[in-house]
Length: 148
Image 1 (cartoon, rainbow, N blue to C red):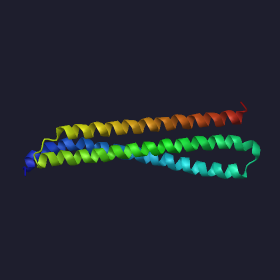
Image 2: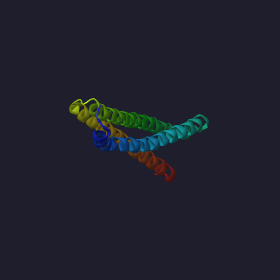
Image 3: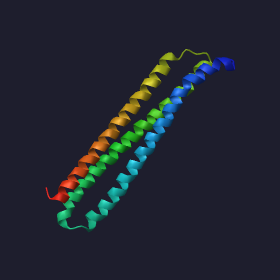
Image 4: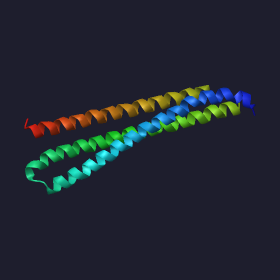
């Protein structure tokens, strides 16, 4: 086992992934809030679709289809972001284990870090796609209300 003096550099290196986990946690909070809003809006539109006039049903069905696509995008975003956080946690564990056990796991650590970054990038791409889709739905709704 190494002395505390030798562990200090490992603690300094591990701070980065720990901060990354915190940042991804805030992203996950935002993503889960968006998912909740999509679900709430879907429930509202489903009730309106059931009780609405035939003329409104086509528009509502279109909105419901967009909400379904958005829910799937946000879910994918959450899965990828959570995977990124898990990979960052594994990265911290491997950093400490390699120091404590004096193992040469540089390749594993590089792969974990790269995978973590890739997962977060994919999550953000899905998140951006959801935002664009929600703006498209808003534009459709605005065009309907203005009679275009």
